[in-house]
Length: 342
Figure 1 (tube, rainbow, N blue to C red):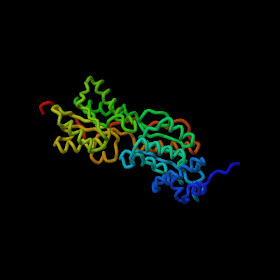
Figure 2: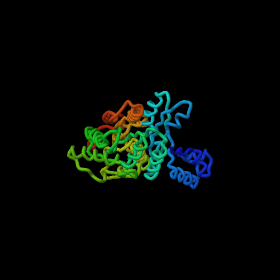
Figure 3: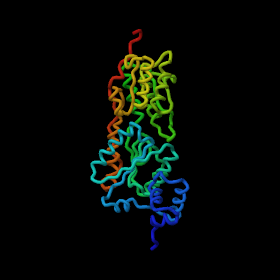
Figure 4: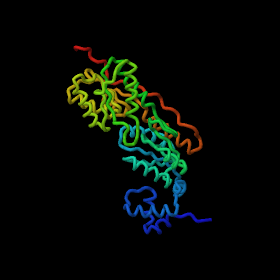
């Protein structure tokens, strides 16, 4: 029987130390590009595939390895999801949680390829990123259990809410208050990762207006780069209109916070002269009294983690359970519009 290559073999043939070879295998960043390429060539030539199970068994205390992959690890919505993930992981006696981030579709592919090739984790929770069918197949063939936390339609196990319904619910709430000039403020769609959140929430917004017999004025639709400052600038544009909106549906709470700042600078009273509703219900929204739509961020993290651990432990098959439906959390930034002439 042919002997499997070892870490010693990789290091020797690449002309590097075992520590350097190990860092390349485990995705470490402090390795020169040419050194990494040399080690990876040896790995590919030998067909070396490290076993995550063997690495855990070599430790004194065996650990269950779970990875979490997100584009921006500091995003408030992700932080809230991570709380739910940690709630489940920390309830277990033995755990290992690895966080991965990627800043572009190219980096996403590289991260997924590395995880599949190097078996760095047994399970992967992908948050708000679109995993292609080919990448799903690679991870499955490598024995990596995958679940996505997102609201985009796609194959494979997924935990998320219906974004189009969320947009509809938010807009319908403003309509029920009596607003008719309702603006939508969101991301350009689709985004660089192909994610469709803004598009789907916009569709819900449009449907709610159409169901109410109202036309959509394109001057009331502002799309741009995601961020509080960008939203503040877009909101300023809306507030400069001759017939400005009486309400704004911002596709995320972060963007709603930018709208609040724009209203403050323009000396527009919220909610008396401008109602603002966000989406996500991040922790900061309750501090400023922001009316928003909750998508149960922490619960999504808990459900996804319970699912992958159940699969790894042989207790679970099929799809993850559904999340509770979206709902409006009414706070201080919305109210009926002023009557004409007031």
